[in-house]
Image (cartoon, rainbow, N blue to C red; front, side, top):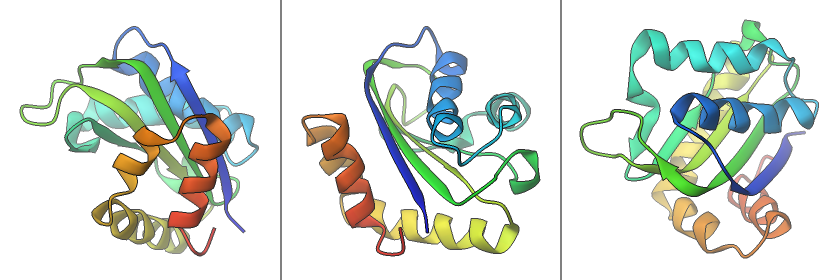
Length: 145
């Protein structure tokens, strides 16, 4: 069972705060431990903005052992976009965060998200009027959720 959560109209002063708030959605839902938030920020600090996958979309995550308690996917829609320093896909207004308790589930969730994104998930999440709609859209896009 996948935990799905959403937050809309979120304000963030820069990419670090955006990543923290996106990861906090998973912590608040009980899918990740508190340490997961800092771990997600470290991923970008150490590896650069590779998490910005496509125009305006970042995939927030860390390794399962850094706080994944359950399989969780969250969506955070920012009130105003932030810059990550990606040469092609900045600024970011939509963050998908995910966590898993083990590496096998990690690959499966990533694969499911990739399929959903190629099918237009980001546009549907941006168009969803409220947080409940965003969560429902995300859940529908991930059949295993």
